[in-house]
Image (cartoon, rainbow, N blue to C red; front, side, top):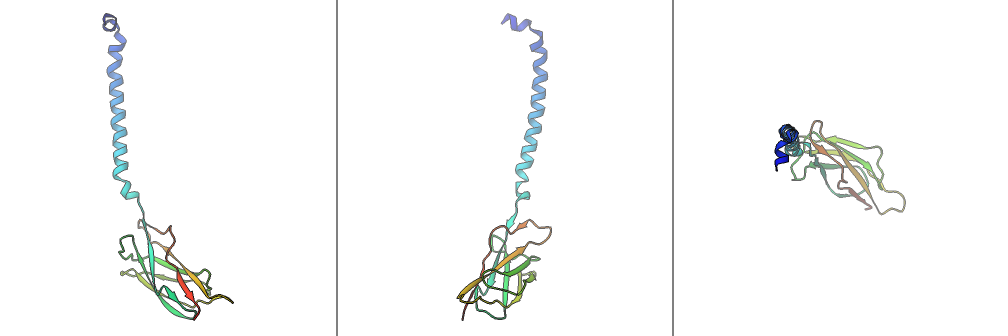
Length: 146
């Protein structure tokens, strides 16, 4: 114990190290708390589309498409693109959702020879400036031979 009391370096260096550790610790804690509280701000909301009808036949017709968030709330200002998958379309059909989250597009799907059914793909371009994404597959429209 007497040797420790005579060591002047330990007594002088210890408070400086504690102050530095305290300052660095508080700064790190502050950054971590900001990150945790900001996690919700960095999150994105996945969109889905609800086509009506979900099953249709070849030939020209109107599709009503409603873009919704995970809670089922409509999303305005999204662009919806309908394209051929295993059923054919001449080009693509697009529409922009209104305040009720709905748009309608005219499509004329056709099936290849010896095909009883096919699908149309629906993709969503989220509204600009929002925290929306369309990363997962959306509901497809089934086209069946009459």
